[in-house]
Length: 392
Length: 189
Image 1 (cartoon, each protein chain N blue to C red):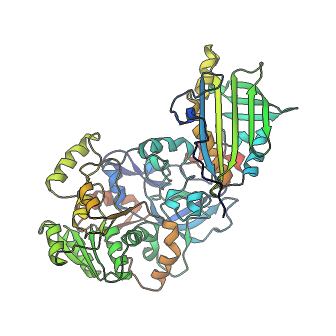
Image 2 (cartoon, rainbow over the protein chains, first blue to last red):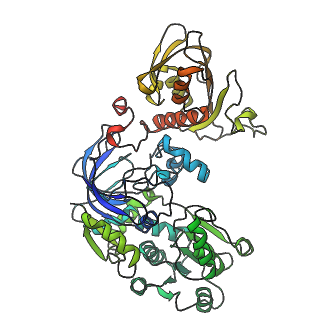
């Protein structure tokens, strides 16, 4: 089959690779009809996340048609249309039992689990098309993918609903939704969201659905700010204003009730702290993350407020404003998305036309042009707001 | 749900808290590892007590043949197709709780170990603790054995227990290897 593979920093290409096969009894093979490039794929493209190997198949946002199922899978059958969560979870361990599939104990293969146990103090849960720290599973920017524990994760899609409307159930919609949920929004609250990329946009949509009185979105790309505005947010361009000062002015000195960092480890901008972080990040030793936005959320949120972090961080960061964090009495909520928990509810929102999941798609490309998609999603973020790849 | 009285003592031997390659036992390399498994204690004991099940999740164990009176014969795969043989005697067997074993004289390596099963007091499943200890023999065969056992018993114990937990909780051993290289896929069916 054809698949998009990783070959080092800023080097991805579409190769011919062996077809996946059923390996374990609960597996399924999915013929992929639509897949997308995620902002967190760019952390791999930029070689910011460790544990990649030459030839790894990328992609963790995908959907398709069940081609084949293993003998223990009694929930799916060939021909079913499904969206596959990017988190691989067994559905049987303590964490899955307690509705924390993104903390699944079993989906990272034993021979891969040691590295992340050392790095993070626990063995990370498996994910598709990502670092070998998360299991080294082949991803879905390909014609076919093997889906482990396929009787637990994938959700069936009714006939007549287009791929584009449901594809983002795989990651960015539940990720934006959980970001808003983690922000502990109460009706009428003011929520500030850093980053108007795909997750930021879904966080805006979700915060409004959850009853936020006011959503303020922060970015520097005019097209992304325009999308945020169309979705009901007031917008701030951090190239034009000092963000904290603007937020304090807008909220008459109180500050937003909740702040969401939908940016993560690769903050843009030329603030002094971010420049220092960028230099450290290049060394891979002194620091691995640029937490400028995380610092700014802590400084800007109101006393007793909540900071929610859906943005991906990879390793260590310093200059953590622990004084502000403690003195203001803040709550910080983070985590990889428990995708499986949200799928039935969010699919229903789509079917009821309560949310538009397609307005952020800027480009649709055949899989063969995936490398072009990566390059432009990286360097031309203003126009390339979301890329959908079509393998068949 | 009722709980046992709070424990104020750590119940594992203090060497278990070390990151060393030797935490006790008769032999030079040893390890203790604990894992919580979300299955009933008796089911885990029964599965392990039939040693012929162990190759399902032990990476290098090709076969275990149960012999008479608690003995078992282990065939361990080595590089270059060289098998290592080990005959093991059960030295302690408390149904549902503990199994201990040791290698007999006619084995290719000296080895002892135990596995203990305990109900978690807070309903989180079964606490499983494993101890393994062995002397890598000298010479060419010793090198083979050391390589097979990945030199560090704690690395081996971690891997084996992770796979045991996966198999008992999910019915399969997680793998991301390329399809044709998947370990023992045929045995899962």
